[in-house]
Image 1: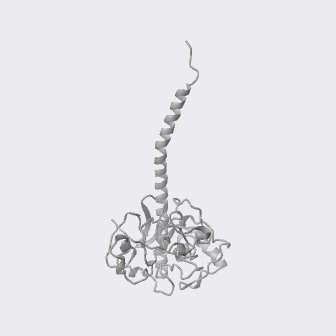
Image 2 (image 1 turned 120 degrees about the vertical axis):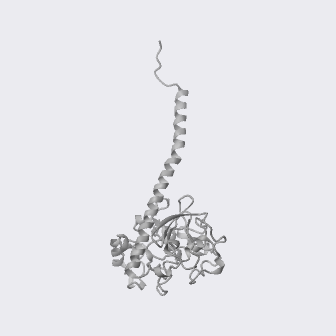
Image 3 (image 1 turned 90 degrees about the vertical axis):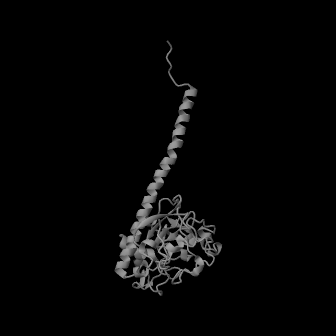
Length: 300
């Protein structure tokens, strides 16, 4: 009786086809698990940053200042000592003092050629963002995927600082820090304000994950984004974005959340009013942004 010594071509093709089908079935599951892990790491980053904010408040009596003017240090360098990154602060301080007047006036950022300014900080990066650790749209400084609410981090050191006592809607109902990726949007910076004030704050006047359509990289100009989409929050997580709230909790907010429908017609000229401007209306996302609108909106 003749013995077969090998597979026939048809049998081999069938085996290859079966393997291809199995890979096709497994790949989405692997990608889903990978994204789930990335989302959890991102939430852990936000948890650490929110605790840094709270520790800063306990120590200084108010939340960090986000920055006053371009080329000025921002919120991130103020939080670094409270998230076990004192060494980075020491490096920057040796080049250009972070504080001119302690807890009052921030110093000038070093050039991006100085040591520490392009240092990738894992705690400031979300692994779901496929762009590199340098933010080319914001003058080539180290990128941050997290940016505080401009209602929590005050606009300038000349304004009354934000304190927990002023958050009358409840700390669990008020956004503190959100994500901003550099693919849908242009990310941000942890070191300070460069090119645009969106490098140091975020706001809720555009729906979550609204796509930025202006110029990028070295060609970036604020004029290419007249509606200030760059100020919004966004991520590469399917369906929404992670946020830290003022009580230190971290939650995933879906991009279907009830939001102001028309973006930011004033490009944020009334972000800074003491209470909710009437023209922004009663929308869940807007209410979570304002700390004292009296609506006490909860995120279900």
